[in-house]
Length: 125
Image (cartoon, rainbow, N blue to C red; front, side, top):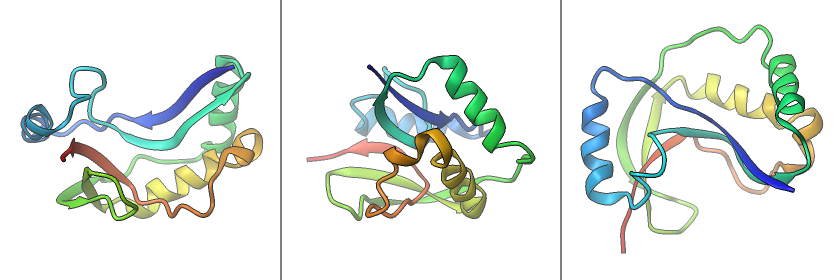
């Protein structure tokens, strides 16, 4: 079994602002680039080709969209994380998230946890 997740790595002209915040508050800053998690970590025996085929099938027809993020808020579900929230593009990201959790990934979807698209910028005590 391999632990995997599916993320997008947005590109912004002002990414240095996010990097500065993450450098100050995110202990994972050196391990992973700024990202939005679409499918949270899961363990499975699916290979890369199976997952690639699944993503290509369920995301067919998805077009590019505008993504705007602002407002840093604490994680409402608990924990000490700081989230940069999505203010434009939320519906598109939620649609992608929902499509990815269909088919072979459906059993990994934790429906009791509401999905809020965000980019983690920190973890504080």
